Amino acid sequence: MARVKLDLPAQFGFKTRIPIRITDLNYGKHVGNDAILSIIHESRVQYLAHHGFVELSEDGLGLIMADVAIIYKGESFHGDVLEVEVAAAEHTASGFDLYYRITALRNDTSLLIAEGKTGMVCFNYQLRKVTRLPADWKEKLV
Image (tube, rainbow, N blue to C red; front, side, top):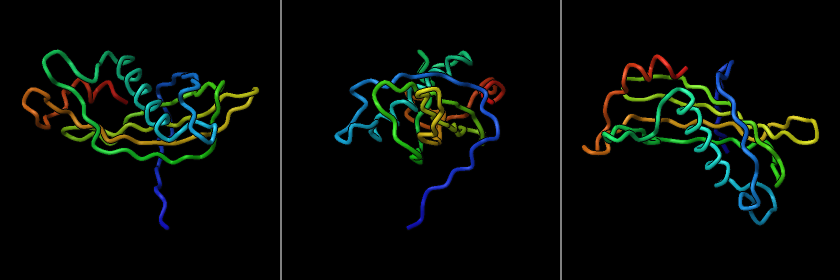
């Protein structure tokens, strides 16, 4: 069976920490795949805010996720703090990719938990259509 492969950027310009909540666990008593996607979402929102952007502005211009890929590398548990690194790449006229490296900080060690990518497209929610990515986004999202 073919596996998803990601070529992560050499450097990540943003880093945040997210603690694992009891509600992030599944029946296997480890962080569920749905929780990892939620953690990616939270990291993206923080990354955009760091650069002065929001996912949806008052005038209806925002982002919509076109695709997502997650490669699970290890388990994470309640009490872990996840360090999520985020970097933008592959800018196009209407969007960009965001890459994520998720590491658990546990007992003075750092364990790789997951790698991911989301394809983000600029979307006009009032007109319900894809639109051009503003120039200042391309300049700041690196």
